Amino acid sequence: MEFKLLGPFEARHQGQRILSGSRRQERCLLSILLLDAGNVVTTARLVDLLWNGAAPDSARGTVHTYIGRLRARLTPHGLHIETRHDGYSIERDGHVTDIQEFRALVQRAAVDGDPGERLRCYDEALALWRGPLLADVADDRLRERLGGGALSELRLSAMEQRAETQLTMGLHERVVADLTSLAQERPERERLVATQMTALYRGGRQADALQLYRHTRQALVDGLGIEPGTELTTLHDRILRGDPRLDRPPAPLYAVRVGDEWLPWGTSGHPALEFCNTYAGWGERGGRIPGSDWLRRYTTLAVWAGHMNLADDHDVTRLRRQALQHPDEAAEALDEARDFRAQLYACLTDPEDARAFKAVAAVAQDAARLSVFTRGDDGLGHWRLPPSAGLRLPALATARTAAELLADPRRFTIRTCPSSDCGWLFLDEGGRRRWCSLSTCGRGRASED
Image (cartoon, rainbow, N blue to C red; front, side, top):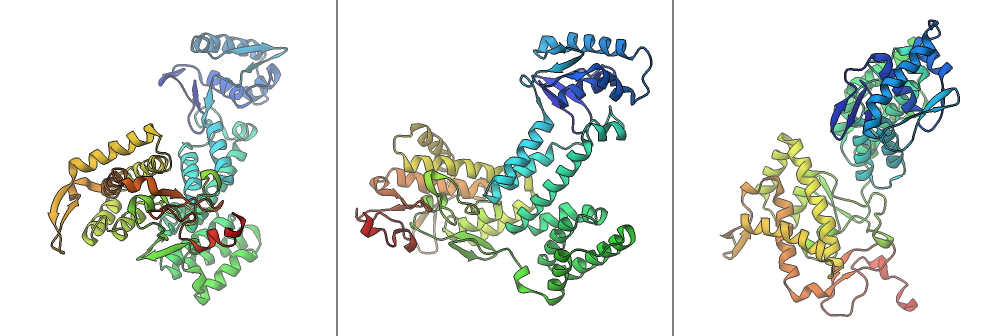
């Protein structure tokens, strides 16, 4: 069963809503048990929470009645409320709550080294938040007693950390859009305000960044009688000086700037292999090195396709415009490209992986159906994908080149750099190379082999 407690209470079994006609106190009682799943909640505590210290004489009997009704509704769906001593408990297994998912995603984001994956976790976690804990069954006092304040604090921290992650990825426009109201409403969250000020500055809005500082300082002085902390005042001074180090996040390792995007160094010269590579390599056993992934947003993918000559300048301009106009479609196309890359990497590194080959072949066949043969400016014929390919064009164009490589004997000369901090793919047609073209990979190792 699935329970939603962040916002109005909701219970579902196999997608169907249940308990929709139950009483408010019944849903509240069930929520209390769910919040403390695996432990016994005494009848006395249930009475105290449900009636807020002003219970009638019949309260214990009423709790027993509520438990009976809930059992009748939940047991057929496999969820059992057990009687234990002078109380009740719900098993930990057999159900999931949005609070569990929220906490797990925030914890996963906090330890993930890759900004793109970290951002995905924060986005998924914050999307679960539909409102305050048990918005329709608990008042503010009960909500606080049940841990609603701690959950709200965790949400704010997740929003701060997501915004900081966005800044490291160059997504200052999204930070401004997400935090504008919150930064005004919560001046005591100086970390959040600092992130918003930096985002405004990087977006060319120095005056707005300074105005936000003045608003925050006045609110802190008037409301709490304190001045802003060192971090915020230092940032204010750097913005006043126009410190160039604030302009953009640090450049990724082993990256090249193309227009306004960072792309990974080329190591193989073949688009299908370059598509699988990263800024800093994959690390040992294919694990991602923190900050290494370049495929974080759709506009980067479009620019990369142009850089690899898989799309012309007109295509790239059109794709970036479409991505701006249709962000949901761009996000879907980006997810497809990431999934395709994972399958392609598996296919290229393991010739025996039939499942990965089949997945790559399916995308390549889509590309073949859409491709047209046209005469280029060089007088030669070229296979190109027309505008009807839409935002899938970069992934489809990559799949076409991958299919050509997989049908070529060179496919058996693909090598994976064995350096523990690399893992890039390259072609070794001469049969003499072991390391990729990143000079630091093989330095000092030849004598060891």
